[in-house]
Length: 523
Ligand code: ADP
Ligand code: MG
Image 1: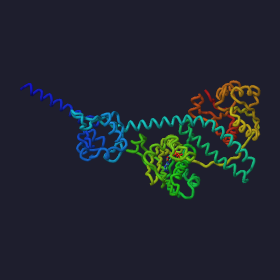
Image 2: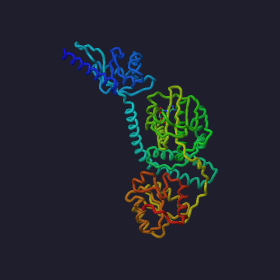
Image 3: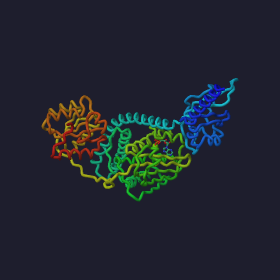
Image 4: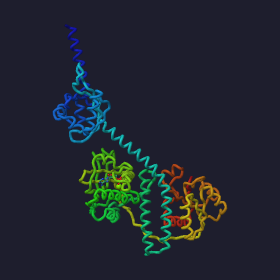
């Protein structure tokens, strides 16, 4: 008798132990009937699906296939696996929660059979993998961004050289043609287009973080007002543009032209989404971001400027929405879409420590809201540049540049403005030409990246020959690529490509006029 009692006790103990595991498991544990109802569920399963208790889950979910599975196709795949294999392992699927939100879960399940092999029910374990899925998606996106960044960096270098030539000769024509002629207006249009192309390269480089952008405080409302006219041109007459600006000034620190680029890209997409017309609204306001929003974005709480761009266009479904920030993702036909517009928006937003949020509904329109951290002090803002008179000179300048087109336009302009120019095709040539002229040379204009000897190496060598020699560097890259190549940005007079002739002339004049000797570049 005593023996029987201890067996019973042991059994109760074992049952209690298993019950304890069942009740307290982190994973959801389930038994489901063949017609898709819960027979059993533990508290963790209820939690995963957002229900208060297992009882509530069992009572309210009467058709698992319909009520919990987001995709009917995936549900069928699951059933097929269970039928053919008898089990499903690490089966990842999206499920609905009580509040309608969607979660990723991973299922491990098997069919439980009777002695004759007849299926009785399914049982298994469910694990929430939403966080992991989110991280995976982020990683994948980051990798894509990285690879397109590498690509963009490579292309931008050559592209900037080409743009330098286009813009350079345009500048020359403008100088020669004088104001007000028809030629001037044509060339101005070419210049405008080239400017946009240049802004695009800068942004490509910026979003791939291959370029450290010069940033400055920008009054958002003012910046938007400046591009309003351009946006109207982009969207055309069938689409109405409405703007609403915050009362307070919204000063953010951003790169030159980034707001214009961002709005242009969003407006272009809005236009494409409204082939039969509609309206595009741009609204700015100051917001305080905290709580749930910041948790979702893993961001910093604080005061932000919000720019809301909404259209009344076709909208998009969830699937499309998930991919829009991917480089090269486009739903437009070949030649119409590049799939880069929103990647660039994404880049601009991230580079400036901001956030972007999209809401869209098929047929009802789309809203892009971007948030940028407000600058601490709101004092200095953008000033519109005035035209200055260009000054030349009679000094001697040694120009070293391996790209023939760029070399030609630079030397042509410098000669046009009275300078004497000595040309070199690379760093080694620069050193030779320098040695032939030595004391006669007033300034070096050196491309950073050249074959045989790069700009930095040539400069160091020439500085040894004549310590007082001054130099300006030309480069298609700035920031981290240069520092990787051992050239720091600090104290380096640097002109970035595509070279704007006016800037080049101004910088050269300033440098030649500066009495104080140049800062030591490579200490
Ligand atoms: P592209 O415009 O070249 O296709 P984007 O990166 O600018 O590339 O946009 C990617 C995709 O996002 C578009 O092809 C389109 O499917 C979708 N999209 C972007 N903006 C909108 C919008 N306002 N309304 C509807 N769909 C949009
Ligand atoms: Mg686009």
